[in-house]
Length: 150
Image (cartoon, rainbow, N blue to C red; front, side, top):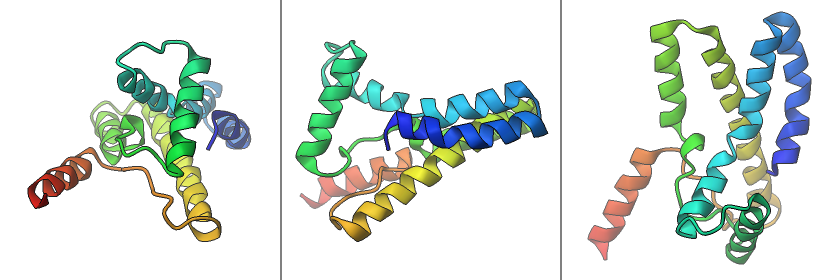
C-alpha cells in the first residue's frame, strides 16, 4: 500500500484518538501508521549499497523491483515485524508511557491494511503474491532451512 493511502486511512482514526486521548496521542498514532513504511527506504539503501539517497529515486527503484517480481521483495521489513511490535509492547509495559500505545495502535492499524491489501491481490489477481515476512526469527529460520535443504 502506498504511503499516501496510509496517510488517508490514518486521518479518520487520528481525529477520534485525538479527541478521546490527547492531540499528541492522535498525531503519534497517525505518524506511526504512515511512517512504518520507512523500512522500505532502508531496504533500498541496503540493496543499492547506500548509493541511492534521493527519496524519489529510492521509490522508483523499489517500484521497479516490486513490479518485476510481481510480489514483495523477499526481505525483512524491520518495522513490519512482530518483534518490532513486541519491543514496543515491552517498552510500554516497563515504562507505562501511553504514547508507546499510540505507536502500537498505529502499527496494528498499518499492518491490518497491508495484510488486507495483499489478501485482496492474492484472491483477485495472482496467488503468487506473497505476504511480507512478519518475523525476523521466522525469516532467519526459513533461510537456514533452505540452505540446509540445498
